Amino acid sequence: MRSNAKPQSPSPFNTKLILICAFFLLFLLLVISTTSSTFSTQQQQPSSSSSSESRVSNLTPTPCPSVPSCTKTPPSLANALIHYATTNTTPQQTFKEISVSARVLENKAPCNFLVFGLGHDSLMWAALNHGGRTVFLEEDKAWIEQMKQKSPGLESYHVEYSTKVHRSDALLETGMKEESCRVVSEPRFSKCELAHKGFPSEIYDVEWDVIMVDAPTGFHDEAPGRMTAIYTAGLMGRNREGGETDVFVHDVNRGVEDKFSMAFLCEGYLREQQGLLRHFTIPTHRAASAPHPFCP
Image (cartoon, rainbow, N blue to C red):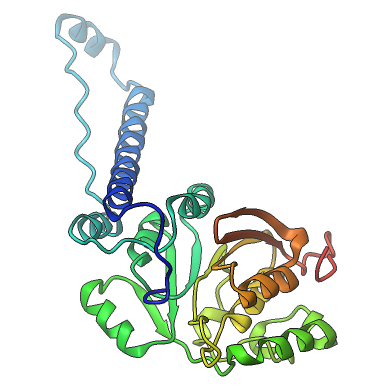
């Protein structure tokens, strides 16, 4: 998510300005919503005055409604504003790509949001999911420690991957042929080689509403690649009790991301592609009222 990103078309200044404006508008909406709610409550409060008090009130000017107190800026939003206002390092996705995920988060937040990768866009994702739980999975221990010093409020976990990009074709063939890879179950108990079983236990215990796959490293043959990340994200969505999971995969111009997202998140579940980002909506496969094949 960090050093392997290709240069983006928007200039750093324009991207930074767009992000600052977006966060400011988010804060403004929070203030307006709080103000409207307070004023509505004041308007609806019934009067408990007696008839004598009512006669006195006719002679006494009615005081103006109290002005709502200022709403503090949420820490996630404040940290993101400060970070992007004081650095030239901007998220590695383009504005149009980010907008796809932002629209989903606008409807679902606060929600459970799982992100494969810890990077320069992490504060932004946490802010866009204000009030929800945003968790980052990262392969580089040193990078986690570096990020913790800068942004201690981010929840991140170290994850190891045993696969390599040069094995992707063999893993794809296994995933397509093995019956165990088409069985919907909790990933840590799956018999499919593509199911990642080494996450911290709390990752498996949460039903994730939104998942972003933008890691691990996948730009050379000895890199771990995103084969298990993509497959496991789809399995998590299928295995939830109800509802659906929005899954995003970045860098779909590369072979692994392209082939594995279409094979295991399924072309039939594809909702949108913008630039190098694909958006899939994975429905639960456990709900008795709506049985599904692995891919529609």
